[in-house]
Image 1 (tube, rainbow, N blue to C red):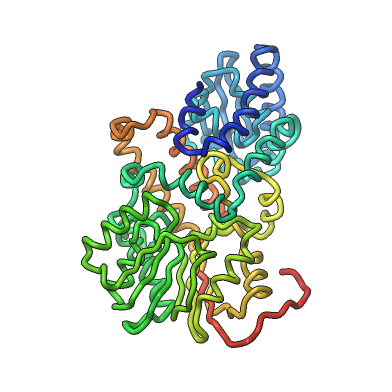
Image 2 (tube, rainbow, N blue to C red):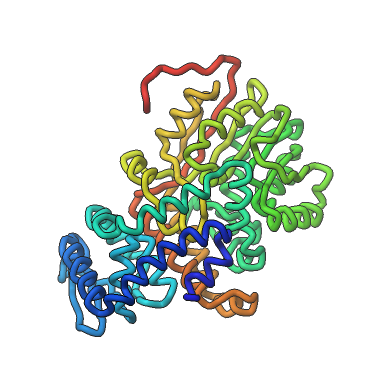
Length: 439
């Protein structure tokens, strides 16, 4: 079993993994049968695509020599290819194969975040890498993603696949409040802990929280926001998660904070929640909803908020121009990090709330560069504690997986192909209506 599959068993559920293994088996069997000729053929195709790079410099070294692409006058990002199979894995696996081959140690890079930025800047090259002979593997990858749809049972499996990797692992890089979402940096002197408290406070203020309020949170995480809201605003909080590991630690942290009388912790899917609350908050849980369930999600949220109440949403956003392409394709994160996930666009969110709810949009604030900084600090924290990963019983390859994941995301935020926003909705008594015009 390769390192990638060994690591994937920690992250992906067995049924989904077996489907994806078919893809890997088919591409790797083809490579082993044809050997060096296939690798060289794939190398030629990749180098042909890379010759279109503009505005940056990339240098690739392998056993056959060194090749420079792009603007030679600029400082070059260096890639060292250790295994010839790297080229066929990228050719047949596209961006997914690129991440897997890094995970397996087939290649290294002097600046992973810079490499991501280079490909975002040269999106036509990136799209070309995800076309052509990559289409051989794409149907299997797509079937895997479809098998991970976020129905009630599917959501549970997908959350387990990601968050139940282990609290100890997430504790290696998160802040003292255990916030696994973007912080808000008012300036570059802010620490990660301060930025996360600042983010939580911004959401509380957007809801105009009062001690008399009963706040519902969809997506507990490890209890960081619920504790912040109850402690600093005196309100009651009901919060729900479907992750067993998160539930266990959140319950422990709530008890240790002395706020058990103010905070009610549930283990319920959002679709099963009942009653109405003064306000609702959901922090980067929407990415786990899935695009097919966005209307269901917002309709349910609206039903849980009393007239006159508000919903505070923090969501990662993909640029509207890239939404349709992303919705039809499956990337490395959806395959190996967060099965079943999908990033909505602002237009898609606003269309859903327009057609399915009586929410009014009061505030939209984007702060994507703050997410890039948050991820950079997470990556630094994980690097400092890399030796502890193995002590926790995880394979060495897990560090490479998450190093790639963090760089992949940081580059996207820095290049503004993705962002993050806090959106405040207010609840009216009017019935939703459809204009028939899409956003």
